[in-house]
Image (cartoon, rainbow, N blue to C red; front, side, top):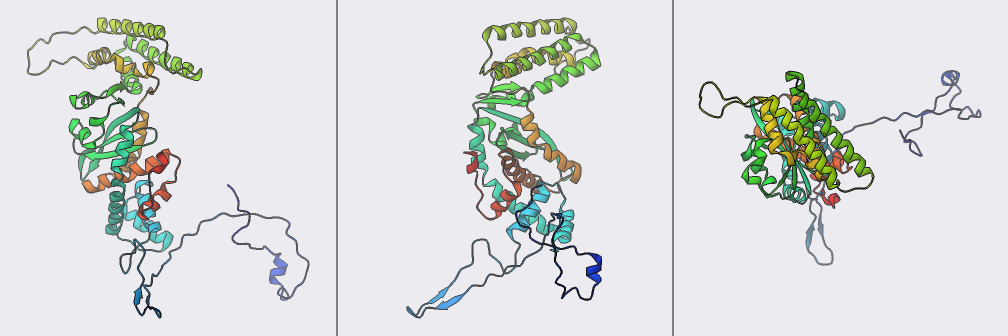
Length: 395
């Protein structure tokens, strides 16, 4: 905690005898400060500003001149940008519900709000954030590595999906009723992306609609699936694959620390051969068995065999983090970007409408982008309502 050079208020602690003395006001005794203590506190007060439109009769020209209200002052009575920013911050950053926001604002500042007013403020903020969508999309499409993921959110009692496209500096979250290709396409980023996209091996990302992108599988997801094979099926090949991925990760860290931008070809070939040997052991342990009865659709193979086939078919994507040092081991950037939406679900339970879910995601997209770049989210919200916010800091 840092103290100001000069305090805002100075309060003197006099001896108890002096306080009770009837000559205290006229006393001229010598005083000296022997010790100081500081208390830092916050005082939230409401302030009403009145804008008066002035009309003047010019003595020179004889014309009647009339002033104009500043931009944003549109009605006889309205709420200011600081209050709106606080409401948006409590909802999208503090994960507080509408009714509790009303209680907090009245308790802290003495201003009474209704649930409808809170929703209108959030809707206005989301519209302002959505105007920045083209620039967010442009930044994402220009990135070398893009992180994508999706998570379920409850909207009006039904499951919808928040689709995330993120980098280490930019976040964009969109909401769609569908989880798969249709929802990803609606986000408008991946269909036009031509760099490396990191994801969790969800089959929808390998659709032809995204054929221009190079894929990278999240190592953390692979590791969790391997751990499931170890715990549930006691198969040693899975542990060997875990050890190989861990060794790849440590080797890359050492090479990066030494200033290398890629791994030596010989080293890549050695690890690739070891990867293939582990898969051979896994397939010999889990041979495909024809079903006894013919049924419609694809025959079931089991989770272990499906994982082995995925590791075989997507070998280049699984090892992408080692063959291309720009790609991180995990997809945590995307997962961290929508972690707050899961926290919102825990506190609020569900959004009342589709607009509520969409509004939250758009506001949080801007908040998370500002946070990633070291900015102040509350100041950003204030600037949004002042029409002075810009993404120029990304340059």
